[in-house]
Amino acid sequence: MAEDPRRRWLGGDRAAHEFPIAQHIRKIFRRALGALNEARVPYVVGGAFALHWYSGFWRVVKDMDLYLLPDNTNWAMDVLDKAGFSARVKHEQWLAEALLNHEKVDLIFGMGNWLSYVDRNYLDRSRQGMVLGIPTRIVPVEELIYSKAFVASRERYDAADLFHLLVATGSELDWTHLMELFGDNWEVLLSHLVMFRYVYPSHREMIPSWVLDNLLARLQRTRIQPWRDDKLCRGFLLDGIGTYSLDVKEWGYRDARQEMWEKRETQRFGKWKAA
Image 1 (cartoon, one colour):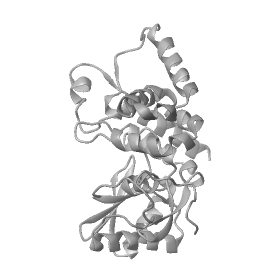
Image 2 (cartoon, helix red, strand yellow):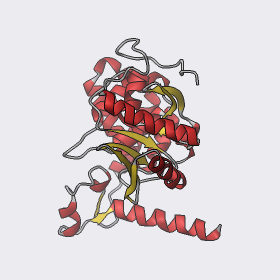
Image 3 (tube, rainbow, N blue to C red):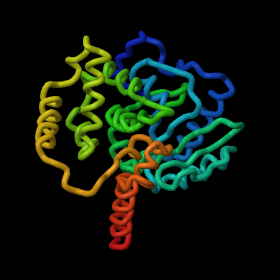
């Protein structure tokens, strides 16, 4: 599998498989990738490894993130069980995990905020690459940015990762696709782009003018349109730990995350029943 030639790193020309990680952890992650490859389970690598692949930026990793279609999750778990891991579903809305010697491989089949499931775009738009010396596919950078944009809790805030990705790949992004990913949550994207301009004023040109014009026009339209629905809190879409629990339990706000999840599951059941 040939390495994607379009990569441009900020940090130099370090080989793609050189990732700073302890040897015993490297062996475990390589075992997982090798087992899934041998079984031909479709997946893409995300998380810190994808961040490193796109930008050259690295940090200490606690686990390996793999994205796969919901319908393939049990398949992947069975394969990793046979490879010596102990796999289980951790969160029915989005996450399974496989453990070996206290090291973890996350099998991600949905957004951590329950907003959406992994779909074919994650696979079809992925790039060929090498991770820890294993040929694999890398999550599309637009989907990676999208997932990181909603990690904004008191315990973890992924904006820095998102900004590094914009610096490294902004000139090559499919901005139309990125905006389609955010959809009605366009304000999350706008907020990150404004902060990106602040953090990296010398890279403002990475954001096409038409993108900001579009988002600011939406802001202007909504600014003059009062909210006419019941009180709604979208906080759980950004921080699911419990920071916004008081808003729902005592202050009378509707929980946007729960409502979106129930609506999506109803639609999913309806499609399944029709099929």
